[in-house]
Image (tube, rainbow, N blue to C red; front, side, top):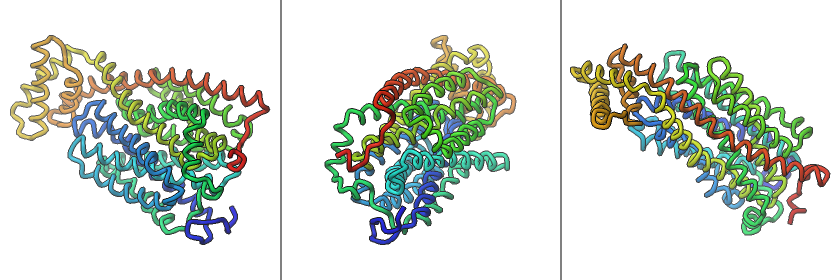
Length: 490
């Protein structure tokens, strides 16, 4: 990019520094995503949360992204992209500290929400920044920028796993990893001059940007597709660590494997985009991700990694290619168009996909709970823990008594109270044999319910296959995929 391009401050800019700083800011969002996913099982046990409550925490870490995108993306032109990144820097610091000092569901929820809003601000600023830095190569550069979402998940996941294996099992330390890339991108970006957005450079006003984003039928089609592609990619990824770990495997390593493959494939996006075209990529992504999700819903043991490989290949290009297509096909929608895509994607995952997958997991896990074995275990806990003075031990005994009372009155185990009673017993560490038996009952049930929730996402891949197939056929009919310039689209 030429050094004399107009900037917010009127000074020359360092394109490489801005791109690298943007990538590190995206690493911060990704480490947040990976570590929140990695600690979900720990939060569930320590704070005695249901799968649905954990889904809401994981969901808040997503739909908060959508809220900040919706509120701030339209103002990237007027407030400036650097201003948005300054707010995101503060949000990452405050959100992490709020989670670390959390005392229960609501504090965890608020902390996850603030982190997610900071994540959204990063994308609200950096997506139009990359488009402004590389106006003639948007889809490829957006894919290379978004390398660092899965790339950051790899770094964060491996760091979290290393802490765990090194004896640092505290989930607070794991979420604290977000602070490392946050401080680095703060040093790189917060005092650096930024370019103006493409919209400002082309003289596109706020009203025209809104008209391009909201009055273009193709934009609405892409927003609907974004809701589905984001759900397919981020919904299962949010649950992979907890579900796989409940099945006896290191769940964070499976997420690291998925993320690592996605990072490598996005980095090599250039030849793929040139050979397949963006719409061709979306067609194949819908097909392969459906196969991977279906396989992941049945796989166990080593085959989980094979299924995860197919899933990663399927979803890796979804998010950046969707952004690239909108930026190239509806260029006058500018930062607002990109922000709306992120808003719809994350809001759908956070408010619908993640909590609903948790709800499905709860419903199907119930079928895997052996009634007689659980009743006998809870009876042993009620009597065997009666003399314990610790709060955790008393909580476990009272939870067991509540379930047994309900079972005695109705003849059926209440759910999710039963699963919660088992989680309280596990977290109490009151009796080694009782804890081991509770884990032996609960983990297979959580693993089964979680895998069923993956299966429920597969039909979305079929819908997208039809939609993207139609778009690809239309491109072929007019001679191939065509990019619109921001001047020529007026």
